[in-house]
Length: 297
Image 1: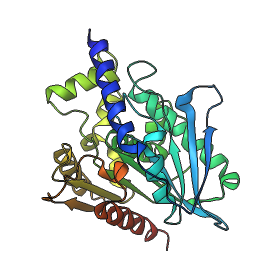
Image 2 (image 1 turned 60 degrees about the vertical axis):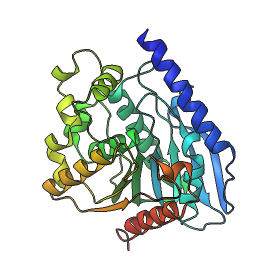
Image 3 (image 1 turned 90 degrees about the vertical axis):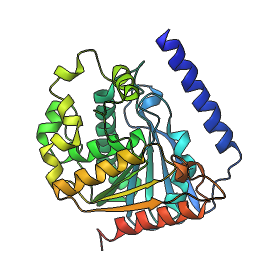
Image 4 (image 1 turned 45 degrees about the vertical axis):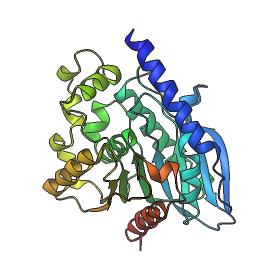
């Protein structure tokens, strides 16, 4: 019964998101390579797209973008429009799939997927025309925790061993989390249900579990600067504010972009992804990419 209800919920999410994106037009000035396999196993969860500013010359700074979906739903198609808008700002953008929890893997397996994607991008830097020392990582909603964990794993042999990822081969100059689901240990019943679906039975006894809680991870002390964005209308804004406090406790440089409520429209969860034409979305993308570029000038 639980799987049936979850499946029904995920189908409703997909229908809603497809309806929003169906009327959107990709911006001009971007070239794309579709469905690049970063693991050669035929699994759709191991594909990514790459977007470039049209007619770009030389090595580019790059962004690895990780879609949201509560670890259970979504793929790179959700973030294709958003990725094109980021690429127009002078970056190569890697829009990465990962296997979904519940049916294909669990959250540690997703981290292993993303580490493999990072390693593939690193090994093929010349092919993709990127500057390996000018890399950034972003994530939205559940992609936020995946992005920050991927950045931490990239710099830590201890975490690489714990999550069985191997060495990704890149260090990120900065990260960005927008509308992030950052508290995997939240005691709300909804989070309890989510953990039961994306982690195995008895997960609290697994050594890795405490290393998904940012307050407990010693490598947080050396995390690269983090750009944060949320809104008053976002159901996850408390999680984002808590993560901002966690970053401050660890001494990590951060910048928060917070949007108050508007009278004429709601600035809903992940509005930057679904409504990149909003003036707030344009501002958020501009500030995020400026935050990145300051790290490489």
